[in-house]
View 1: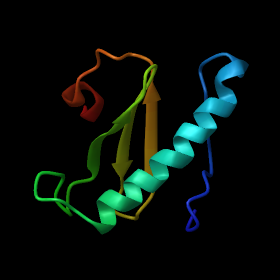
View 2: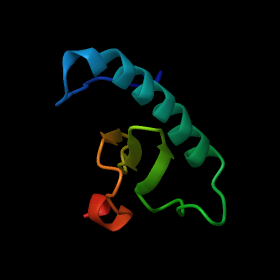
View 3: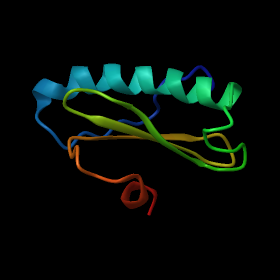
Amino acid sequence: DKQNNPLYIQSFTDADDALKLHHIVHCSLDVVDERVNNPKKSGPTLNETFLGLLYPTENYKVYGYLTNTKVKFILVTTDLDVRDADVRN
């Protein structure tokens, strides 16, 4: 929502990881805001909706997507070998 609170979280892992995933999603929303408000020349352009890899952790990779209506999608994956092009598609 407008205060960066997740509206919907779906987890396909064990319940033990649920709290960790909530923390990762909240941190990811901060990274999305930083990228949108302070775009770099090497980063995505303003009209590009796929934000790419937001940040990797030891066990996860976190990707972001921002729609034209400013809805943010966060993908947290345990597949550390996934490529940006595969996530984008």
